[in-house]
Image 1 (cartoon, rainbow, N blue to C red):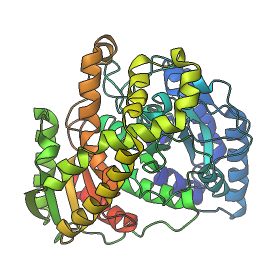
Image 2 (image 1 turned 45 degrees about the vertical axis):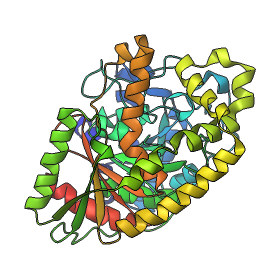
Image 3 (image 1 turned 30 degrees about the vertical axis):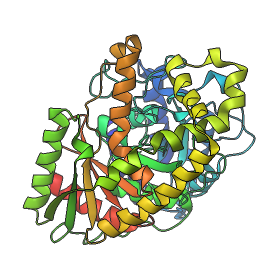
Length: 442
């Protein structure tokens, strides 16, 4: 059973369909691995063992009766601890929400469960999802898969680590400024940021509702395609015959490389070279509208986040990590007219972006311009925390600002990723392109 725990979710699902793998035994294997792992308390906020075994048992019966509900029926996954789960605490990595127990599942949890996915538990995350580094001294900081001394990436930190260490077949996280893609890149996974509004946010603890999105963290592009379908109760993208040959890809020069470190840039360029060798046409351009959009970030993200959470935060600010508290409170300085004008400006920039990149199949950037930083230094040096956090989120935030859907793929260098960005609502096309790129990257 141990060998199955690090297999892609799709491979597990097909084995269940063939009768080669029992969902109950698979779930028991994951639960046993989680309980035995020395860092489980830093990865899972709580295991949902009773629920997992009940769901796996039902999936096992369906498999025996030939009544499976889809490829992933019976596959166990983890959920970031901001998705409501009935009768189980959902605290979003914050002591402010300690003891918060919802009475119903979030809509995406209910839909995935109806499709047969098994809920293993809830994973640790950055406080209220407001950091890209994955550190949380108020609850727990998961270890980076490649080096426990390094930051895991956030805010879906435990989600990525649970998959990377073979403690879940896949995980579901959220992405407001990079929170699916950064931990995916830093832990060797594929991560999908979906289009804003594609998946229901009902029952999901919010950060900034006009940017919040949901997405899977998994081992393969195929897994992400199947998980997206499971989350919305639809059909997965058909990946057969996908090719990278002939694809027109634009490397976005300028901002994504400012202050970038040598290793992630070199890994990105090597990945781009492999795509070119596989027949992709690579162009390079700088788009100044990217800088203009990025300059709007302080006007748009923190004011909405603070507007949502101000009353809760100010009732007990001592329960928050000071650097995260400071990020929320920075939203106080933005006036309502500035916020409204910022959104009007961003809408115009989004139209300009669409026109500029219309001739390309995808725009490419390094997922993160930095490697995972040392966690201890981040905690002891507030200035370092601030600069590294902004750099970590810089490239991924492009996708959120322009309202894109984005896929990050691992490169051959641990802790690095290459992102493919396409227009809103084009997940199926992105997944086909990503599947072909994945094959070209090896």
